[in-house]
Image 1 (spheres, one colour):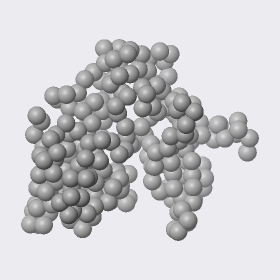
Image 2 (cartoon, helix red, strand yellow):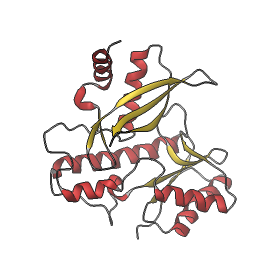
Image 3 (tube, helix red, strand yellow):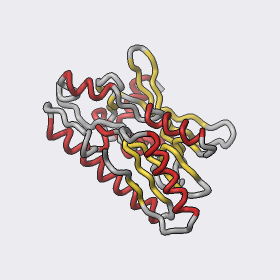
Image 4 (cartoon, helix red, strand yellow):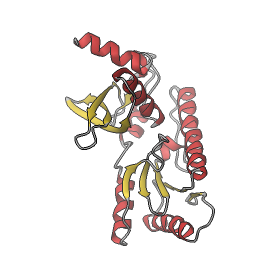
Length: 242
């Protein structure tokens, strides 16, 4: 397969060349590619999103895909990337991160292993709690929790103020405002849907804002674990905004 063939294959799977852009950590918009790799132990197909930034390859683990053909697996992987909120469906010239303020607010945003996530995981680990990281609570639902307590069925999400529309610390760029309003509102709707789907499947959902003091974040997680152990009805728990 030639390079042009591979590009066309990716474009078709993503739904068009303009659907293949991600928000890079430096605030730019970069074209990405889905890479499929068979897992050594299981033989299942692992999908990753890959792009190049400043000459270095960046990768994001999307998860497993199990379609019967390569083209179907590529389409499924691009849907995972979209559902994870990684893609920027915007191809108008100059519209992406067009102001210095927007670029500055974007630079601190990552999709996985953010500083608030690492701090929370470290604090939980110090208290003797053990968990999985970046895993699906329900294998058939394309939703990935930041911290997962499988036995107790507690899924923890650490939400960034910018991407998830924090009512106290969320900000909205003045440039291309309509696009960003739609983007953030879409993320909030997806968060609500995620909570509903997981609760319906018997999971407690704990959402922690990135600005939440670490002791309060740990207390929220422990509240979820305690409610699960006491056999209460599953629910979504959101900490108070400070």
